Amino acid sequence: MTVGQRPTELPVVLAGRALQLLEERGITTAPWFARTVNSGIRWEAWARPLVQRGSTSSRSTTVNVHVTGDGPPVVLVNGWTASGLVWPERLVEALSERFTVARVDNRGTGWSRRMPRPYTIADLADDVRAVIDDLDAGSAVVVGLSMGGMIAQELALRHPDHVAHLVLLGSRPPIPEVTLPPPRMSTLMLDNPRPGEPLDEFMRSRWGLTTAPGFAEAHPEVVDELAGAIVARVTPRGAVQDQARAIAGWSGAHRLRNLRVPATVVHGELDPLSPVRNGMRLAQLIPGARYVELAGVGHLVPYEAPEVVRREVEAAAAGPRP
Image 1 (tube, rainbow, N blue to C red):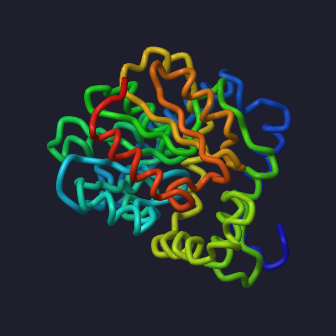
Image 2: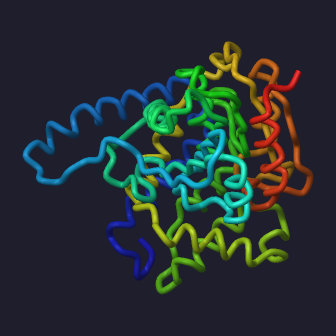
């Protein structure tokens, strides 16, 4: 443990180092590993209520959603550790002029901290299905960034009638087809602030690393907006680990070949967190998927290329392309 580090941070540090070792050995992309992680989550989710019986704490049964605008529904599902607040204001306002925009607080984030835990990507997908049901819309254009794209894929696989069109931003296919970033990148994203480092500065530095080289320096106001949205409702460390486990347990890439939902895959050429090969592979696996590769763009596609995202959402809402 580093000097000044709180004891409660130790599990996160150890998890990061263990993850780096497993990734270096190629273990985390093995189907057997994903199935083992997923089974462990399911077992813990079953056992936890028994252990906590008699607890006075209440648990929410539905995720929180931020809804703006009026028109056909568009559901925005964010990535690892990010709540529904962490979408660019400019993009949300533009979409809200034409659509009912629902930004989901995934379990553990935003105002969905009281949801049952742990959980799988399938559980998070079922949460989004409930959001679409509550919108009374039948189906929606579902936009998923990074882990949100994984949730969106699983939603389309489990509940295709709820998805009018998938828009996958900086995402990845399930194990074993995933291409991981360098192990050091995963460890950095699980790192802790230095002693005395303000949280907003830490968030700027860490998430700035996921953008294209030079973007954070050229557009500090964009990174400031991102960090401010994160700090406004910080995701607890336990939820960071819960979501990382859900990602590690997600597998079954072969299932995408049976997907019959229109899909658009948008990926940054310079994505350091989800290498561009992931976007290419998604477009190959999903029948009829349209692939858009963005030159000079990193992982945070909605922040780095908001106009592209807006155009692709509008095109998706207009109907499937031939």
